[in-house]
Image 1 (cartoon, rainbow, N blue to C red):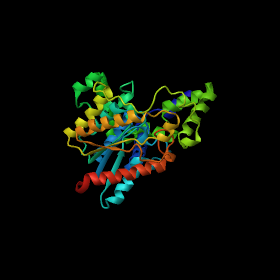
Image 2 (image 1 turned 120 degrees about the vertical axis):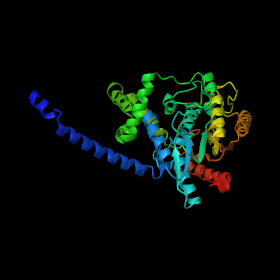
Image 3 (image 1 turned 180 degrees about the vertical axis):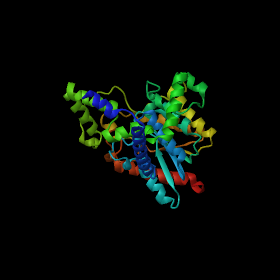
Image 4 (image 1 turned 45 degrees about the vertical axis):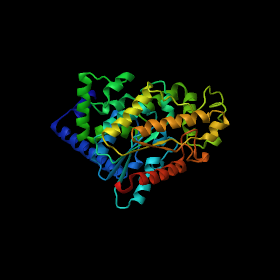
Length: 373
């Protein structure tokens, strides 16, 4: 029986041709699906932070025609509190600008992701600086200036071989090192991915089919066997993010916090400040139109648990605006823009909150660009 099985699956010219035809057909379907997605790229968000997924987004930005906007940020811009990617700030902004500028082909690319701080966003901008962008938008979440770990998602640094401001990056200790072997493998993977879309989008397709990455799904299956209680707890926490903040019990989450929101570490030696300045310098070097805004904050929730130092916050905002404006980029203060009922927690917004931010962004961007649109 085993012999028959091996005879059945043995490789012959005929089977090779059949396999190649099937792979070509599947690849064609993938290409068609992805081209459909990116007709309105504002609705597309990264399914994970893996290198192949980042490269796919980068390739789409390079190939796109029209008025191209790169949207950078973290989970707030990614839209962690909404399930539908069409309810994110970049998606709504694409709609708002399209209605304001009829006849223009507006393309907003949401390159933000959960956990992307100053360093990650610098590397993303560095990789995209020569891709003929019309505008860069950065959702500045001030909490990243106080992050202890400088760099958490190294894949973003692999999108480019050259880095603007190498000497400054070296001071932070995060300049990535790749062996010759790793560099060659990376270039081969990119070359194969440009030709074979099924390979390039493998991680994204897996996540779309399973709802999570293979690694996350395997962990989930393992917990289902070894610790069902922990799995149930994690699923409950995931679902909590989509509920309004006032329906949750924050006494445990925030009641024992040993800090107050407001103070932002803007000292020049802070690695996060170094990366923030590198972003501003790179934009100036490329003469790139840019618009920065600070994330809306749920001050009602913070006040309720005495976690807000308004005096420190005012001082921090003034200093941050000064740092940003000195480099020629306007920083809009959106911290009090959104009513507290539109928050899921202290910073994440529901669909209506995201829509409100997008409308304000569209107004401010239209005013800033003026006749340059």
